[in-house]
Length: 118
Image 1: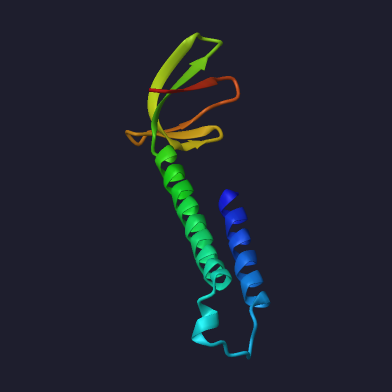
Image 2: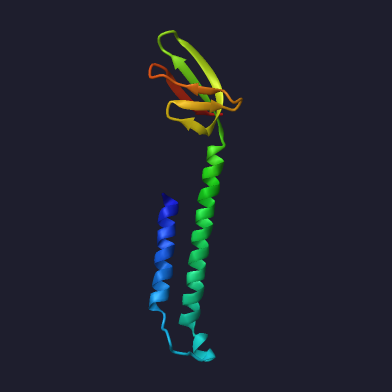
């Protein structure tokens, strides 16, 4: 979701930059180096670099978070029996999960699931 917002913001900034720049008027080298022109150019480059860095950071964090190993305890209230498994966060989907050992588990509505960090 954050990536979509950042991408939209980046597209709007680029579009604004291209729509507001002057066309057809040749500027001499002296007027190109004015403070406002340089600030505008480097400001846009800096903002786009910042957006790219934030997007990359969010992607790396999401990947890292998904590969964290957590402890999942599945307990059945009717029998009082509980089992503990090691699972990656990304492998927990609704009522299904896959352990690190490759065991696929489907949890019924009567069972309770507790996820805890190691």
